[in-house]
Amino acid sequence: MAGQITSLEAAGTALVPEGGEIGAVQSGWRLALREFAGNKLAVIGFAIVIFFVLFSFIGPLIYHTNQIDTSLSAANEAPSASHLLGTDSNGFDQLGRIMVGGRAALEIGFFAAFIAIVIGALWGAIAGLLGGFADAVMMRVVDVFLSIPFLFVVLILAVKYGATVLSLSLVIGGFSWLFPARLVRGEVLSLRVRDFVAAARVAGAGRSRLITRHLIPNALGVVIVNVTFQVADAILAVSYVGFLGFGLHYPSVDWGDMLSNGVQYQTDGYWWLIYPVGACIVLTVMALNFIGDALRDSLDVRLRRR
Image (tube, rainbow, N blue to C red):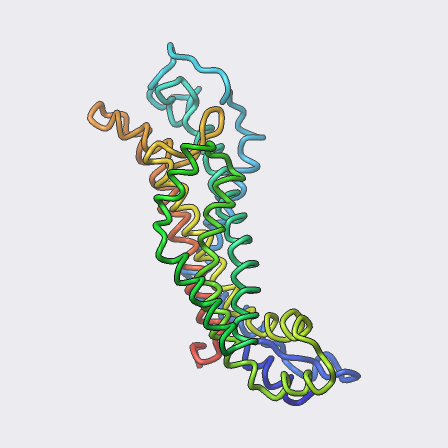
């Protein structure tokens, strides 16, 4: 049990001994939360992400717009009281369009990150625990996937099967698990020689139990940090796929597709078609990176401010 407590504390958590008082050991997660709250950029980033989640999912329930029927007679209207950010080339209210596009971008971002983290954590944990020949083969599989041009595959699948929230999430998540796999494998290689793993082996724990109950929970610090970067990367991927014209199709829309349509009118002075949606992409990705950097600093005891 002593070895397990030491390992958990090193991973950013603390284990309360069985039968002991809850307040006897200060939670490492509480220390991490205090460190995160002390990072102003992280707090700002978290507030921005919460704003865009509410903006994209709750906003359409408050700001009602028609995002189904086109109205060419109202195309490219300047911002006014009836259309706070004007209209686009199809007559859709631009502010309502940004809300719908943000919902798709966030759904794809979080779902793709979830897929990547689950697959990557399991793959990396299994490779790190097995070691030897199995580890070498599994990591070569990762290298092979890394050599495949991600954008090239996404464009082919989008053209052949069509782009939807589900398909883009699966494709992006299916290529994004490679980096989490490497990170978790490196963490497991250091954890598997710890005393608590040896004690679990002696107690009769099988490989599946070692992975799910001991190794992955103690690598959660690495996984949690990587989630934010995975979401940011997925949102960027959706944006540039949409910008190239292979994103979601009507009636669905994403920020990249909106930006691509707006750039066509750049010389006409229709700024509301470019800058608001561009700012949404930049702010969301920047906020997620701020959160990721702060989580890395707060969960790694070596990087915490003294």
